[in-house]
Length: 470
Image (cartoon, rainbow, N blue to C red; front, side, top):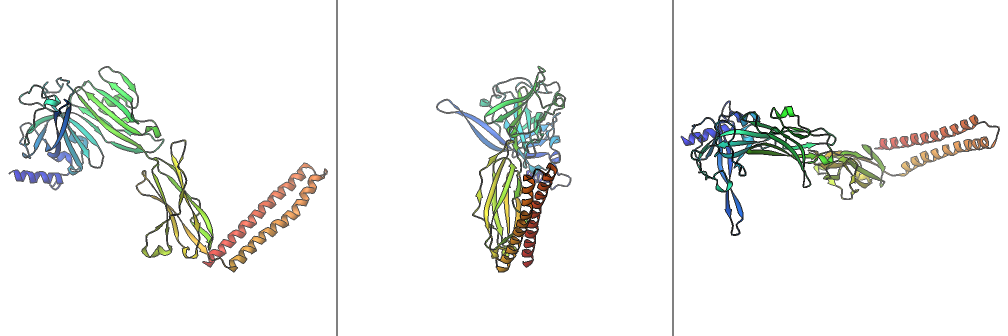
């Protein structure tokens, strides 16, 4: 019979039973009970030892038999607070469960909920999603059949047998669906925090704190008992519905840190840490076009620029892929790359340059060079590339270059020979009015622009001839 129960539980957890797919349909969830025992050393100092024991959560009714009698069972019975409804649709194998004893720090008081006693024993049950989607902490109340004096104190907790079954009730929970947040600069971000209590008009306190560089700052606090509220970011009407989520102002570099959501209903005190990471991806650019034309043994400085990234951990590399894929060879990492220092900008972001002197050789013609930038804000590296076209430096190319070069020089000399005497004579002669002088100057400027256009046209024609030769 015990074997059949274990097989059934396994099928439940693996999602192989028809119709049983998500956590709210699973009657039993494996957990680790992290038990504590306190001893005193020779110097009188308390030392705590932790023991991990196999246990499980079983959802049902008082008096139900344990589904797995070989493990410690925490039977969670009917309560107004049901942890399962907050994580609906999640597969059981995606959950990690941990149960710990809860120390009320010497505060002895009767919980206001139905059936509570002053000698109740408390446990916390923390369930985490394996992908970091959420963390939920529930407080379990157990009423022992025979009260043991002092057993509520952490130094005198009663032992739990290996196959014990403890009937409990969930009286309060605290949940966050944003245990780790990544956000860019100048963005508005909400940090999720939710809670539930099994009775109304609870003596409730909600706080938000920021821990950064060893300093702790209180951002918001509200006490239902005193009615006092300090800070902002959490609407009071939302707290009445169990929503304590904090809305941050526009993010900046100083927004990064650990935010702590605290919910207290005496004698219980629950909290969750939410880590906020500022992540700004780099903007990557090259100082060259997608294709570079160079003559054999020519040179050109090539720069890869990564701008506006945060945090500082960026990696920039240059690679070369041979023409035609290189027969399946891997890209070659360039070892002649130089780097600038990190430049820190006023908005808190950084910039970095990686550059090298490109030497053109005929056997490298058609090769592709690419800059690869890796940053913690990006799942995949960013790549920017160009293709190198190398032209043989022969007498024909030399003649073409001399033709176009000397042609441009001759045109410039001719225009200057014609315009400069006119401009000089117009300036010396008083008979020339201001408008005539300005006309001469304007003509001279247009001539200079014409010279530039001639040079550009000739240069483009030369490059076009080179590309046709390829």
